[in-house]
Amino acid sequence: MKIVIIGSGLAGLSAGYRLCKSDEVIVFEKDPDIGGMSASYSLERSGKKYFIEKYYHHIFRSDSELLALIKELGLEKQMMWLKGKTAYFVDGKNYPMNTPIEILHFSPLSVPDLVKLGLLVLRIKFIKDTTPYDRIKAKEWILGTAGKSVYENFFAPLMKSKFGDNAENVSAAWLIGRVKIRSDRGAEGEKLGYMRGGFNSLIEALAGEITANGGEIRTNREVTEIVITENTVQGVVVDGDFIACDAVISTAEPAVLDALTKGKLGDLHTTLKSIRYQGTACALIGLDRSLMKDGNYWLNIKADVPFGAVIEHTNFMPFEDYGENLVYVTSYFQDEKSPLWMQKEEEIIDSYLKGLERMFPEFSRKDVRWTRLYRRIDTAPVYEQGYLEKVLPFAAGPSGLYLAGMFSSSNYPERSMNGSVKAGFESAESLMKEKEVRSQ
Ligand SMILES: Cc1cc2nc3c(=O)[nH]c(=O)nc-3n(C[C@H](O)[C@H](O)[C@H](O)COP(=O)(O)OP(=O)(O)OC[C@H]3O[C@@H](n4cnc5c(N)ncnc54)[C@H](O)[C@@H]3O)c2cc1C
Image 1 (cartoon, rainbow, N blue to C red):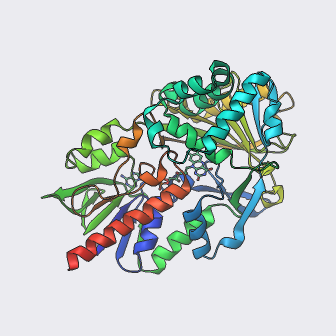
Image 2 (image 1 turned 135 degrees about the vertical axis):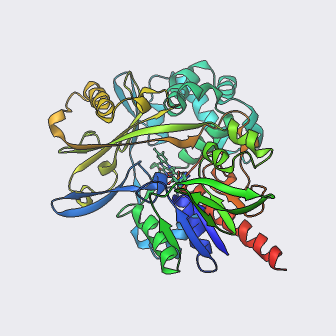
Image 3 (image 1 turned 180 degrees about the vertical axis):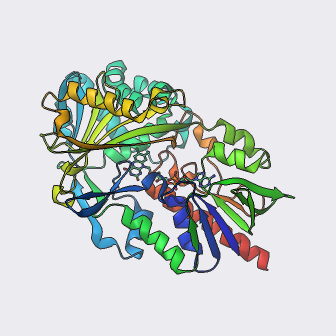
């Protein structure tokens, strides 16, 4: 079969990897680089080249499909499990948040509120099925279980920095999923996974497998239509050319899929229109010296600055791998009217640096070697109340059309690299099953 895959993120490459040995695979990617949201910059320091993700990434021990894939590709030796120190910056002060004991010292909450927070986390640990919580708003659930102060002083700033004006609509299912994964730590704190050399190694290995098996990956090629007649996929249009194929796996976001299919998806059209995505404007800064001298990797922020988190990659991975200090400064944004989408790159970088100057008195712009900004409008579904009903199927309806990506069930109630790898595999499996049925 000739299979077109739209998108070279982890979902598209994983699907291509599964299918390339049995079928003819062509991946079309609209960007110049492969990898989608897991793509990396290729940078150089003192003549030494290194890769670093455009968006900060780490993984968890529970990411079983991703870890199995890394092993299958012979990249297991690159996996490192390290402590990434986390803190919460509230009104000018850093509160370490690594161990239960440290969390108990979070003084913006009173002792009775800390007990309520602890009980809420404990309760979450015992929730096996998040489905019933999809219909409840996280805000209402926290207010009802842990009270106003825990909501306002602990969760609300974190949710606001993640979902902006949509924070109050996010479901309790999302919150529970998030807390579950982040509270899966012993008394010593959690260990996070990272591939030495960057997740670029995984992207390159998948792409290498596809091309070694006769597949093609074409970058700077945007699919503008999925041609469907009589409820059957005929091919795609790329740069005005029609390319016939037997099946299409689309990993493009719902609004794009809706435009590509030109109203041929029946009832799914309404769902595609109703799924909201948000964007991320993430700066990566190369510095002469460390920003967070207390060794923090991850800092969540409640302060009047235009970003929600600061992530110092070289407080997590060894500095020697890079030869310079690498710091991400990042913010989610809700739509294309946001200044983080409208403003020029220099303006955003300047506003981020001003924010760092306010937060870190020792920080000086003289220490900045270089900056990069990566922003995309389609970086995560907003997991609003009732979102579960909108999760897209792997087989989209018309014969030969398959879907995999952040909108798939494996990425509910939070998207991740693991979820997209799993989605890629599941869409490939659906396709193989249909192929088997067709051949009988
Ligand atoms: C700031 C940030 C931090 C993150 N941190 C983590 C983390 O620590 N751990 C973790 O597990 N996950 C993390 N993620 C999530 C993870 O990056 C994603 O879940 C995953 O990479 C999504 O892969 P995907 O293939 O589903 O989608 P994408 O990577 O978005 O791939 C879709 C691809 O399709 C292409 N495309 C779209 N339309 C067309 C078209 N018409 N024609 C051709 N190509 C098209 C796009 O350009 C893109 O390359 C993070 C994400 C962000 C934004």
